[in-house]
Length: 456
Image 1 (cartoon, rainbow, N blue to C red):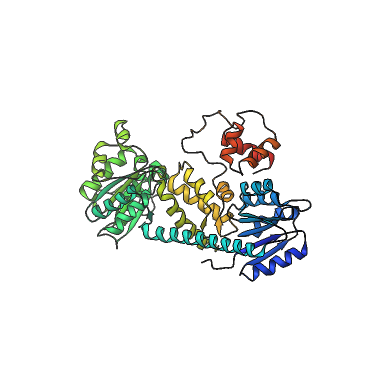
Image 2 (cartoon, rainbow, N blue to C red):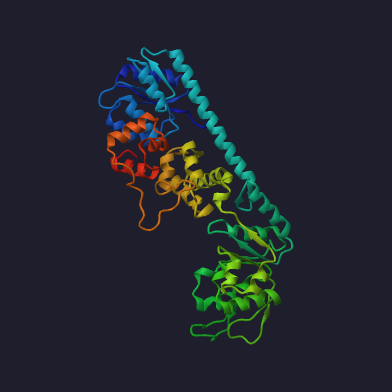
């Protein structure tokens, strides 16, 4: 059940009608906001955030159908009921095509209105239960910071459980943003070194001349600027785990020394004449194809095979889309708590946007998108416009190819005016994909025109 009364927006230019409906709905545990309509209402809809709206169709300045269209853009989850004293079959059909829940004639049939308000509450409750279920399931699917319900991730979790107690070295492969450090941390937590240090080192974020010093340490006076002796990461991680991210960035001389440390458990500081014994589990990661790097001479073959005692491959997010709802639920819960918002989930339209996005940045990109959307949101559910904005505009459809440099299909197709685009949208009930097909243009081109005409 929702933890607050559903919010009903009643819009009618007749004060008596607003008052009567307000008393009727409040008696049924609705929080009621009344408004006389007009263009001011369109600007206020984003902040009002009603769960449902009861709109008079025929009003001066802005009619109920125009308000309905705006509501569908701002918050597709809002359930809308239209009312009018001049009911016709055509207007009823138009209202339903635009997404209205139902259409009432004046004078109002209050028993029927009561039934519709009950339906509104039931729809809200059902949606809340579904969102809560997704959040609970996401929690149960969580495995050391990773979430996955599909077979690829379940197999990965099983592999980590089996190898963590034994493997002294491992190589994690996968695209940027797939969660390679989380795998390394899981190996650490599941193994016998869980109570010792876990250190992470990004090999792509260090000046080449400092690699040896950072990893192996140096003695005082070993080089200009070495005013004090310094222990390297291997010494600091002694007894624990060292995670080397983007290990393919290491220069060849450092790769040779890394191989020696892994094989013999001995590290020699820069400038030192004697080695020091260390006991460190090494988990290395790369977003490159290791064997391609070996073949190209950029990565030592012997180091590859020494690290590749166990190779752990992480699938990209586009190959595990079944996990997107659960990842999203977990991220929304995290950011709702951080931003002190009452967010509980996202709308079906927003879900579809996330499911269809290409995700070149994988789980990290999804997390960033949800963070931005949560910052933008003023309601309890992330809406399609909020997620679209967080995605940076219209995401590529699955199967779309990114444009080549200089290639641009934004203006492809016939020239169109605002009226033609509006009419196409109205005829298909606001479905943008269908409108694009009807107009003979791509969805990307349609979004360009929506922005151009102020119809977004």
